[in-house]
Length: 272
Image 1 (cartoon, rainbow, N blue to C red):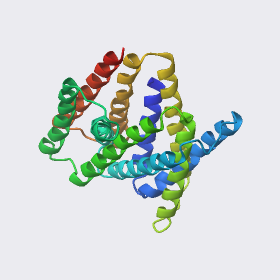
Image 2: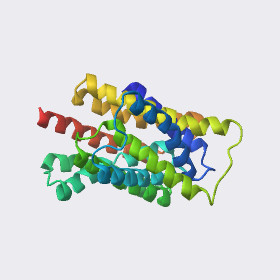
Image 3: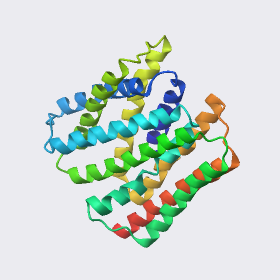
Image 4: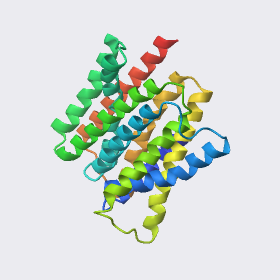
């Protein structure tokens, strides 16, 4: 999980480095470079590429690329650590969607943890005068669609291989990102080509090692470590881009992460 979170943090930093390139174009390169790995794995292990739940797989891809695009757009306006922490609000939206779409119940204690996380957002927006409101809105919308992704994946269930789900996501992201970036295409220069293609490499490594972590250890041990991505990303933002995080920003980020970690631990204990 440490390798996974560091890989995702590196991907986030590269997106920040490429803020002059449109979010659609970044989505395109992020997905096409990942497709090399996903297609290769599926073909090598002779896993049916089209899967079984085709309609839901397409929906997952559309919802996923929407979330990704809004997140990449938010990084242009926010410190990357703040953008990542706001995107991690997704479990709150997932819980709300699950109530209506999956008929699941959310315990009272979970709502307290969610309220703590949401209070962190309010602190970031209300007390940190340096926060860009438009960027915050973009990150918030990204989290909303990311929460919907969780619900769609739950509906898909175990009928399809995890990499089939990821592959659908990457194919749809490549098509959407590629078509929408044509009108505002920026030709990469020199090392920018390496940066763009490494997005998919870091994204794929993050996914693989996160999956391995959950396979070899309990959810209670592994899931809280996922939020180290925020810490790694904040540190990279400070060291590479000279980003400044105010006291209230750090308090807000801390409240978001604490509330969501407590929710993960509580859910894991309830399921045991």
